[in-house]
Image: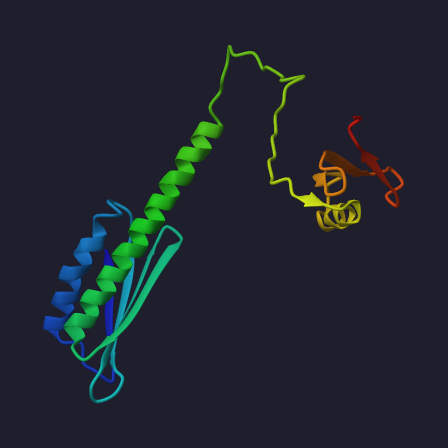
Amino acid sequence: MNITITGKELKATDAIKEYAEKKLARIEKYFGEEEVDVTVTIKKENVTSEIAEMYVSVKGMSYKAVTEDKDLYASIDKDIDILEGQIRKSKAKREKMMKDSSIKQMNLSGVAEVKVEDEIVKSISYDLKPISVDDAKIKLDERKGNIFYTFVNVDTGKVNVIFKLKDSNNYGLVEPEA
């Protein structure tokens, strides 16, 4: 792990450097033998607060944490917690992507491809409410992409279907007999 610690308006003492290096060992375990570059910048914002900025870069990935506290050591601790969370989240996300892609690439040799025909492959359900034919036309127009709308006709009390004709300007109505 290559660690660079610099101070702006604040001297990076040996104690601070040792503390930061000791704490950075917590994130080293996530990378194993990979080359990790860490830049730590400490600075004094005003009389009461000190800021620690940490940048970690490894294999094209970069992580950043910036915290402000009245105690520099507490700020370093917060940065380490933030970085560790980011690294864990990123690692879990990469592992999930690798798992998903390996499942997709799995070769199912010996298994014949089966095409499903003459089966119901999609089902949609919704409440049937008693409305007028004119209101059903309006509902059908509101549902872009749908070519029919099923409803209970308020005049007859029976289930009807209104549909758009191929000319897209007119409608058809399916009503049960009796």
